[in-house]
Each structure stands twice: as C-alpha cells, then as structure tokens.
Amino acid sequence: MNEQEIQKRRTFAIISHPDAGKTTLTEKLLLFGGQIQVAGAVKSNKIKKTATSDWMDIEKQRGISVSTSVMEFDYRDYKVNILDTPGHQDFCEDTFRTLTAVDCAIIVIDGAKGVEAQTRKLMTVCRMRKTPVIVFINKMDREGRDPFDLLDEVEAELQIKVRPLSWPINQGQRFKGVYNIYEQNLNLFTPNKQVVTEKVEVDINTSALDEFVGESDATKLREDLDLIEGVYPEFDVNTYLSGEVAPVFFGSALNNFGVQELLDCFVEIAPSPRPTQAEERLVEPTEPKFTGFIFKITANIDPNHRSCTAFCKVCSGKFVRNAPYQHIRQGKTVRFSSPTQFMAQKKSTIEEAYPGDIVGLPDNGIFKIGDTLTEGEQLHFKGLPSFSPEMFKYIENADPMKTKQLAKGIDQLMDEGVAQMFINQFNGRKLIGTVGQLQFEVIQYRLENEYNAQCRWEPVSLYKACWIESDDDVELEAFKKRKYQYMAKDRDGRDVFLADSNYVLQMAQQDFKHIKFHFTSEF
Ligand code: G4P
Image (tube, rainbow, N blue to C red; front, side, top):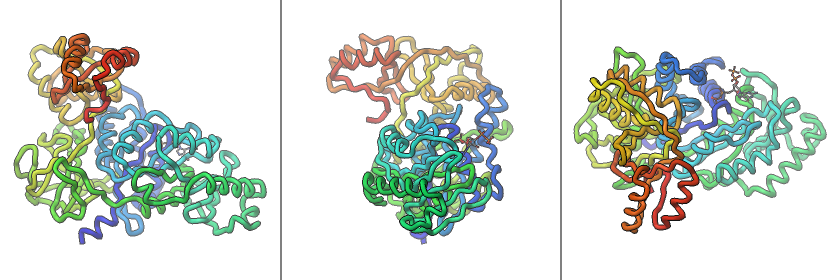
C-alpha cells in the first residue's frame, strides 16, 4: 500500500530569479490540478515584491510564506507537492534549505533575460544534491533571445547538459507555438490566459505543417529540429534522473501555453520520493517505519498565538496523527494531535502522510532546522551545509536592561535558521550574516516583538565568510595570528575567516598554500 502511495508522489520546487514567472507558472499548475478555478488566485506572492520596511508587510510576508509554503494537488494519477522557495527580498537561507526537501525541481527562465543570479545560486544547490531539474523557458510571447543561444547559456551558466523536448516556432509578435518533441505534436499558440491550448497532430515532414505555421516558419522548424537531433543526444530519462541532463520546454506561463505539456512530461519522468541520506545510513522511502526531518520553521503572524509551524518532510514509512515519535536531538517522545497539510492556501488537519509529503507540525519551540523524527531508531538526517552569507552586520544591544532577552532571541532565531551568526574572535562581537537584506529587518522586528529586546545594526563590508582547515597546524596557526582581526567562530565553534575583499582572499590563498578556504560549512 505504501509503495503505491510513494510511486504517485512528485515533490518539487519551482526555482527562478524574481519576475521570471514562478508565481504565474505555479498558479497555472494549480489550475490544472483543480485547486483554483481562475487565474489570478495566487495573488499573495505579489505582496512579496513590495520592497518596503513597513512592519506590517513583513508580518504579511511571513504569514504568506506559511500559507504558500507547500501547495498540494492531484493531477491524473499523481499527487503533486510544490514547495515554495522564497524569492525577492525575502530570499534567504530558507530558500536553499527548501531544496533539501524536494526530489526534483523546475527552473523557470525568462526567455528575454536568460539565466539570472538567483537561479544560478539555487542551481548550485541542485547540483550538489544531484537533484533532477527540468527547465521551462518562459515568456516566449515576448521578443526574446535565440533559443539555441539560450540553451548554450543554460548549459554554461547552470553547468548542466540540456536536451530540448519542445521547440518554439518564432517568438514575440510572431510566436506561432511550440513543437512538442517529446509527444511529437504541434501546439498552436492562441494568446489567452484561461484557455488550454489545442494540440494538433501533424507530420512535420508534410505540407500540413506549412499550412499551420506558414512556409518560412515550417522550413525553419524542420531545420532547427534537424540541428537539435544532430547536436543533442536522444533524451534518456536516466540522465535526467541522475542530474546530468536537464530537459528543456518553451512556453508562456501567462498565456497558459506549454504548461500542460510541461506538467504531463514532468509527472511522467520526475522521480517519486528518493532515498534520504542520514549520517548513519541511507533511508529508503519504502521502509515500513516512519522517519522525517524538519527543513523549515515559520513563525506565526498572529502575535496572540506565538506558536510556529515546523515543516517536516516524510522520508519513509507512514506518518500518523497522534502516534508517538522520537525527537532524536531532544531524546524524547512527541505526539502531534493536529498535523496539517496544505491544499493551495487552505490548511487542514491530516490523519496520515506518506514519503514525499510535507506535514506542518505546530511547534512551540521544540524544533530546530534539521531535527529528525523516527519511530525510535537513532538517525540524523543530513541537512544542507551553510553557505557563506552575502551581507554582514554586527548586532548591538540597544537596551542594556534587556541583555538576556536579546541573547535568547538571537539564539532562538539562529536555531530557526533565519540567518547565520559568527563571533569575531578579536573583539567578541556577534556578526550576523544573511543572503538577503530583509532578514535584518525581520530579525530586528522579531527581537522587539517576540523577545522584547532592542537591537542596532552596524554594517560591515565583508566579501565572504570562509570556513578554513589545514593539515598543517603550524601554517594554520600562523594564518590565524596574521589575520587575528578577521578570525571568527561559527555556532559550532569552527574557524571562519572573514575576507573583506576578493583580493584579500586571493592573496591569503596564495600566501597560505596549505590552507583550504571553503565557502560552505561542510567539506
Ligand atoms: P515571479 O513569481 O517569478 O517573480 O514572477 P511572476 O509570475 O510574478 O511574473 C512576473 C511578471 O511576468 C508578471 O507581470 C507576469 O504577469 C509576467 N509574466 C509571467 N509569465 C509571462 C509570460 O509568459 N509572458 C509574459 N509576457 N509575461 C509573463 P507583472 O506586470 O509584474 O504582474 P501582473 O501585473 O501582470 O500580475
């Protein structure tokens, strides 16, 4: 029984740079899944875009990230779980960590802009974890770049081989549609946000194609397809599953074009829940006993109900409401009387959940990111290493009467994974590092509202935090001595070098050849 449930699950994230069309694509997928009736219903993500330090907005954003954290829907015989990856200003560690809980990803790229910064960063995580990815090149209804150039760029920038499974016929004003290489049929484009496209069965080697798209576009399509067959090897689903090759689709999410083809191919080729690596062993989803881990914790927006929601990915067995589970880090038994699942924006209590599913657990402070739950076995699921933050600020106490509150608040927020903290070894000051500016505002706001503590920020201009190690103790000591003002410890007590520029880092690498400088905390 479990086996069947596992086979039909597809748990994935849509990743993109802001504005490439992630929200629009998500919405169209939910439309096909029957979760929403009309386009425009997933408006909430829009609020994320307002760059503002208005506290209400931060509150709203946090609320929204709870409701849109996971979206589930049924499609054909499959159960699809989409995990939201926060983007825009609230791009943060959470975004990376969400990728530890997915089995595959869809990357949305704006056809006019090509590969952008956030996509590149998120793809690094996918590559590390060998997560299979499908690329959707969006906005083909706009004048964009040459599709072959785009494919080259995706290969070079995302460092993955590509294989087009659909091909655009012209673009912008002259966009006629796409030829679906995977299904071998033609989809003609009719600009319409609600209607699903009609497919035309056509033999591209006959004049029927010319009738549909015109002679010159027909000739061009035949030439392009010849070139594709010549340049790219035949699509092999195993190379996709092993994370070596990314199938590519073209379309226009806004016009609902190419989305169903993407979804149809996705549910067929995407992996069902994959095994999860624990420190002790590899855990197969088909194992009878329940295991799972917490990959995200979201605070409640309502100040009267302080509790958080911890998101647990089920890795094996069956999660059952009220069953006793072992909270490994705390060494105690826990039961959950109101676990939730997320259907579009609605939350509902569930009785059971299977591998691949995400369960929302009410959390009054018992969880940390990365915590493992089992039926008793001592297991520790491996999380994602921390990456070097990109922005750094010293955190200062702005109310000497509330020192304890501040320390406790910072500690708990770091446990939640809101940001990373380093202690500068030279001056003992606490340095907070984030990947997005908004995180500093969220921390300050939450310290005030949840811990009754006041903080002040002092910006520091740093390039990277590098975890350092060496087999040569003498050189390591010499380095730490030379750079004593720039040495810090992370929360696990590991040595971190705070490089204030790329130049300084390069010089350090040159001068200290036996020291390894790592940009992630696990190496
Ligand atoms: P994001 O979540 O990745 O940030 O992107 P989102 O879906 O919000 O899309 C960003 C903008 O791009 C939106 O326009 C959206 O309508 C537009 N868009 C998405 N897909 C397509 C497409 O296939 N073709 C074209 N031409 N545009 C597309 P906006 O003006 O920011 O918002 P709205 O006022 O249209 O809602």
